[in-house]
Length: 306
Image (cartoon, rainbow, N blue to C red; front, side):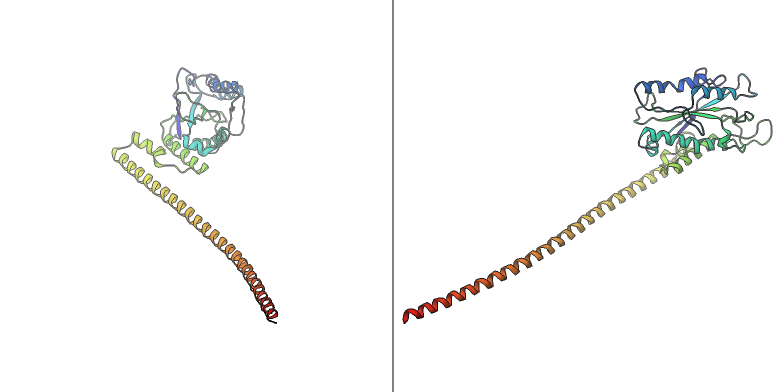
């Protein structure tokens, strides 16, 4: 699962002004897909689907109480599952889209709220999501991902919430609370695995990639060894399972063959018994006819001598 915060810019991610430019951009894929008659998804929030773009812009742009002109008014976040994760989320794009909305609502936004350490829940976060199904410059077969527009202010328009703050659980001063992005990534990943029952390899984890990028050499070597050992164990386990399945199939075939032979033998014995019974009857009848013929010949011979 790849999660990133789009850096503010003078383009579509300019978050010091209106969200209109970003909302317009997020709809560009819909127009292309609708022309082709392909499935699309509208904007969604914690409770509703297919929300009009005009409502998204109005809600985000009006929730800016006490913010200065140059302050960030919203944040753009990308949530992008890997191909393996997407396959776990559903077989069709519709199933995957529904699973993505469920993940955002039940895992990502609740974890996002908790990470501010201000006693917030998902109901306190004003956000809108938009699912995209394609990604330029990607050779992947599956590319579904989600764009989130999250207001700088909470639902009451009173609390400032910045996921880009560097404060670490500050309890005194002008700014209190914190936001631990590393913890968010880890909890969002764990939540995904729990929600969909995903068996994540170490090499797929945030911990692994973060350590390979930012960790010490010793920690990198340690994780590489764990990954190598874990993958070998998995290969051995899968190989053992495969062998067991083959063995079970062979045993099953042998049992079926043995059972069939027994049935055939039983049928053969029955037929043999019937055949034997028939042959015995035929033999007795023929023997009786031969005896009668011999008696008639004897009587005839006696008549000639007279």
